Length: 360
Image 1: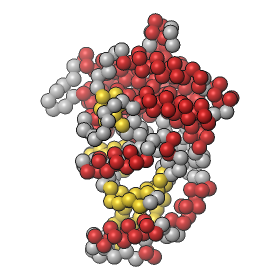
Image 2: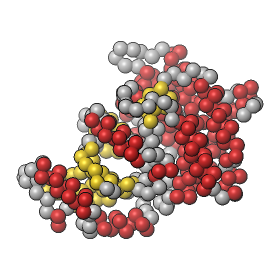
Image 3: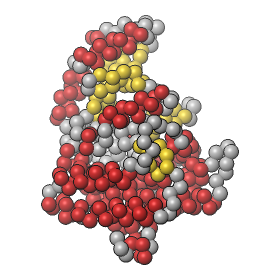
């Protein structure tokens, strides 16, 4: 997950100060020199322009620019320094392979090179979306079309749904980390049954489709070129094969968030999209130039997506609990987790009828 913060932890600040003073890891500097040489540039180390991009939750991200030999132009690359502790959430090697594959397929930024502590990526000349942008019907339609395209990618490796196993793994991590007080508060001993219930209940509805999902489709991970109106989906740490309805549910849930406030952890579920807005997005998602989605198709996917919002709340609720113990960024992870689990318990019986929930 990606957040924009005004403050960062002390350890991050130290590294940031080193970067801002031009003290780059030797391996990174050699990589930049090699890239510049291949492009016909000559880097003056003393004139490198380094900018720290606030907001990465698991990495530190910088842009590094230098002058080219052509006029007054400059060249910019994005440098991603890997954070610590991410192995609790995803496998970095798998994420790198996903990035490489998507880069070769023409999705997202190009991978320019790797070094021990991170990688260098193409800098995309586009803007990151805001929370307000997600509610713009034109932009929303573009996101829906891009998401359909993303889901249809044929990625190498296992096509197995990873959602349920990942949730169970995170639950075990949360149990290992949690104090007895937090374990009781978040009902961790009962969550195994809740995950089993969701997996069995939603599967009974004959999940429409499995596809390659982003799994963290909040506004900070979507970019737009305002001139061409082209959408780029970035940051693939959590990407995997999953039910496409889960990915759409995640996107809808993220509409309750605005990470550019003084209280970025606060979720306002009054902003969750209403039925007509959800139908509009799903109509755009299901339709293309060769097929116009029927009302039946739309209603079926709308219903399935709502069920997957429950899985989404547990998923990110567990993420919040774990992050509260291992991450030093100033973000109220525990309160974020509380809101996610409150939504789960308050909406479960409304989404599933009493007959289904009575045994859960």
